[in-house]
Length: 276
Image (cartoon, rainbow, N blue to C red; front, side):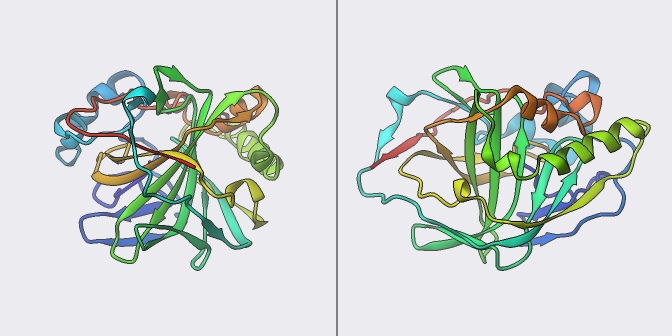
């Protein structure tokens, strides 16, 4: 999940400033030509901590994400209730950040409520293959919906996808994704970021209540690997077509086509499960 990039060279469209409990969004007109981190080679995940002193948590953190969720070890919590997502129809922007494709939301998009605290939807982005695993199984893709509370706390709703029929959410933006991919092929590797106006976006699939989900405390899954983010991983995967997976990969930097960080140690954490 993208978070706190202000102190390193890559300017991205989502800035979650955890340390100051603030959140801002801005669509940058230009991305630095050189990615400071990637998913392979000398700047891949096992090298992240050595790339910048601010990335040290990527190696030393004890609450890192993603993780492998072992369902038999999850702690059942019968006191929780289904989580209701209250999102409104708004005009959104599709952005290619070179290491992920994201949708940026305006203010007053809507929110999700957890433990009597509201977390407002700010951004969503995709990883392929999935970052989280369930019982060791990796999925074709994973969607992260990033929410932020008024006091700067971050909550991420993760949806896993297995190969099958097309995902109706991605079908609503398939022409825009193709446009991003076409622009990538027509430009050199050193390219500016692209932002495309999508128009009104309000998929029903993103507004359903969460009736079975895992919850744990984790981190951003990209540098600087900031910790104490809340993850809600929906237990039931959805479907995505092979063509849609390729469309998500097409605009990305060649070193970020498989933009999933490896699973991290669980350490002393517990994964909780709510099932209606």
